[in-house]
Length: 49
Image (cartoon, rainbow, N blue to C red; front, side, top):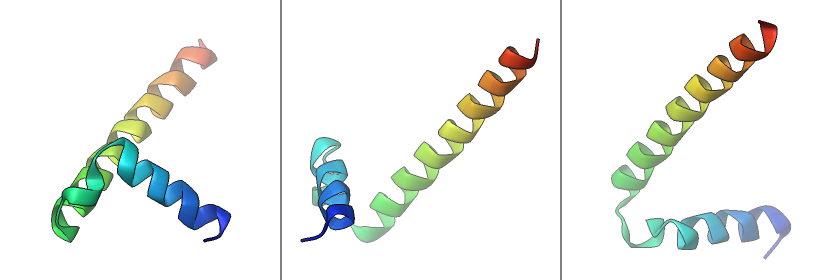
């Protein structure tokens, strides 16, 4: 198991994604990605002020 596979495994185990179906895991990852985009956008706008 290389470093990237290990990090993906830890992510799945930490958030309990290992027990979800592939489509549920994909939906969760999309929601996390969208949330992180909003946070980064807000943080950059906050820093520019």
